[in-house]
Length: 232
Image (cartoon, rainbow, N blue to C red; front, side):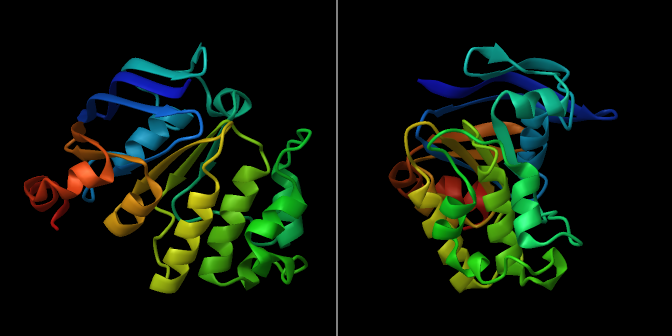
């Protein structure tokens, strides 16, 4: 079953034509990575899916519903959760308050206990404010907060940004462990190693278009694509 289906997506910032006919899919239980250089249109793709940017044309289907152009709160209610670039946790709230603020209870779903099993270090910081956490802890909290929504589609925008290599590896292992029926993951990343470790399929974006789609092994077998579009 396809959880996310994007077809012919065009989006603009003013007169700047940023997304130029983007097509991509994420199936139920699948993790997919979207990679590309700065300015390729990756974050705009996330913004268009989540309603933060209104697409000019195209469709964004989550399950059976076409959500293109819908306001962000309706898209969230349809089962889409975002881990935004820069984490954007609530600095003045505690870890527990950040988690509970986002909670949407589902029987057998994600709750505080499951989040703390995924990120044990947060269990020692439950009463600490968001601005008292390290960058890595803030990223774990941002992911945990999104999971508390019990989404069908989890979007992550550059979760490795500003993290030390060890923490990037930890985040990658946590994301790999999330691959399961009932949750589809779209990871936007510049860190190719993380993207290929987490994603079962990879899309490469350049100048607002998808220029490659395939598995990590297929991408590795095309060094010209990596060199031309990713600077590898």
